[in-house]
Length: 236
View 1: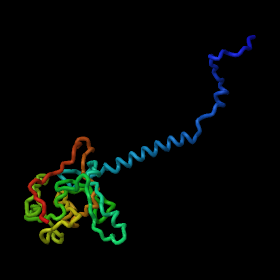
View 2: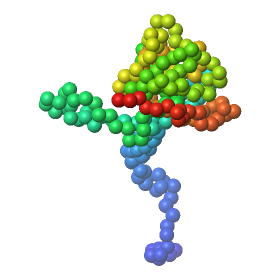
View 3: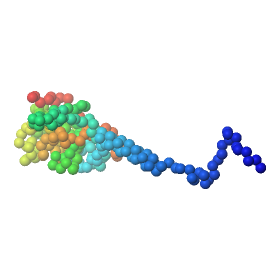
View 4: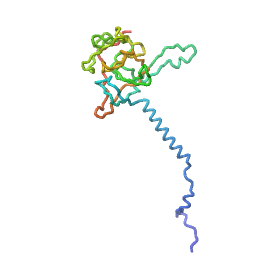
């Protein structure tokens, strides 16, 4: 029987019992990897959620442009803004400093279809079209909308008329959109709760711009906004 040691370049295979006795990776390493993965997924979700949000159309206020049951994506980044004077108001004697809001991309424009928090209940989201900007004068005459005394071209209405019910602010005559606000209406003017009823919408209630219809697949495509080329800005 040869009891000489194995050559130095020969590898031995551990037995089953020896393999079972070998230390495994500590549990804390496995937990840490799972935790890091979960945190990464959460960060990606929050980043995406901060830029794009899904929204379901409920009701007929935007017909014929958008229909109840459709699902859309809302671009929240395009209207991102901040107040340059907010940090300065923390200084002594500067608490009354007026806001100085900056939009790195652009603010809402006439013709944009936007999603916003309903002014009378922030738990609800509404979707309407921007008709007037800060300083604009909105007037409804004989079923037509005038902005700064110019007739608004609204082909998306498909011949329907716009009226202002008695008791609503717009029924008293021209309405001037206050600073920091916009005037919004639904495309289905006969069945829409909008600025004609509850006045102008504060800009800080805007969630984002309606961007893409993704369901049902038969309606897939970009949300149709409109550009009113003929409307001039209100004079300061």
